[in-house]
Image 1 (cartoon, helix red, strand yellow):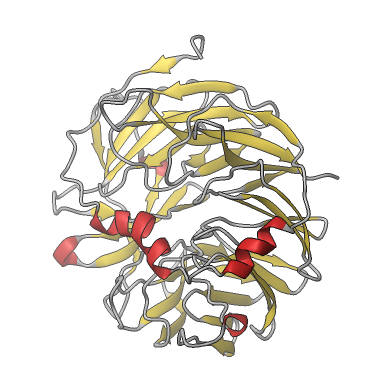
Image 2: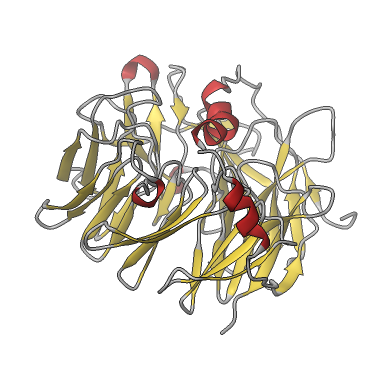
Length: 430
């Protein structure tokens, strides 16, 4: 660690942090929403088959408690760490070699929470800061700060929402602009002047490409297919208002697909899923639409009164779902591992994981085996039958961890005996 270069940068004076919603999502809702575990679940956990994870490397990192956002580009892993100071909460971006786990560099610390995984375009990594209009750009070769982009050019109190994505030279993200409303926007990174002093704020206006017709927030993670960007609006954590699903042509900025959704309460900003010509909206309810015709292919709603074997909503499944051989796999905040039929939305199989209050992670599937790291271990399932192959209870995963498949490695976060998060690579076989 002593030989790893540390680089400095200047940060904008911190704004007043409004953590109420953020902390609710992190700490309160997963616990509030969990159904009571039964004694049978406790007993069943002792009878589960064992499994041993094949860990290829374990990094010398101290991954932040939430979220454990990981990105991979060009055989490198980018992850946020806590700094070593106990007096001030601060963070830094670190770059690891995906093949060995070696830490290549760490940036100097910054005081605001990073709101999403770093976004990599060309020679730079872009870090979005929570509840602000700032984007930091870092040189991916050196880790040095290259630019600070201020997107609130008129000082309206604008905030960039979570879950940006990259397409070409553009960063796409939602913006909340107070009385001006909320919209989906994009920023062309080629407009950033890297010849300027890196500590000087560059004021750049994002280009608005979609404004929700019903007044919701453009907060969900967009998804792009055939030059059309699809985005779902978000109505608010306590709202019963309808939401929208829209597809916008990125050249003309015309809405080419639009659905009003009245049945989902709009209370989450979970990511969308597209397979072939079908888009899936999986959250409080489950639905699918044909992108060519707009036809609704299935709709499954839940009241909360269903018995456990008939309830399989994707509530707070915010880290993504996986399509595999005609099925869709996901976890939820009720500690369920779920598989549904992608054509009908019907439940194929489900397991309530014992002795865990919430599953805020995403599955990884290789060779018809599904891997689910979580706070109680690493679970491995047969995707065809739902049979539990085994559990590595020595593997203490991250409760809100993002997992990424790199070649045959699963890049994930594992806590050591002192509770420090380490990025690890697990060999999932050929």
